[in-house]
Image (tube, rainbow, N blue to C red; front, side, top):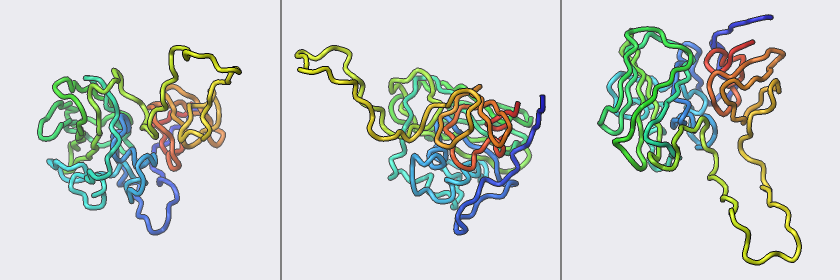
Length: 266
């Protein structure tokens, strides 16, 4: 069995010449689920985000910022509350999942709601895995809140920032693994109508294609716009990969680029 490990040092795909994309050395990490604001931009759920849609992992700024963009003027869109960022319904305990495209020695991971620090995870200057998860207790809060997740680098003055909009206690006991793309369809009635129709009507089906699809059968070719789950298996350019972290795929996140961060070659 061939096993080829390729670190994610490739560029993030071809984009228009007017858009500046971070070089591989500047690619780092962000919260992928529940979807952070930059994840929503990268997935196209929130449009017209500028450069951040192509480099969601690059929100790097000095430690100590209280802003969603860390004070990085290149990504000011992340501070724009007029965009009405979609909030993910969660319970009182939430697991935040990071995708790291370049790993650095880590001091701490911190989570804030407003000015209140709700959790700290100390890595003691170790190098983290390509994907990192933290379970955070948010039972002291309810309703719509924005959680600011901070990755404090251990050997520089920099940190990486991700803001995640949540509806705490909003009907979900577990954290969704992909960014929401549309409002949930109206639930079908559970009881029969009071009068029967004169002819049997077939069950209604959607007339438009969904914006994302479920993962294909094991071994199918990788494709963008698919909600992949952990352990899903795909092929890409003749190589078979297993999904390491649930995500909705987009162009420039091909398995050959995000090897180890999102995909493990088999």
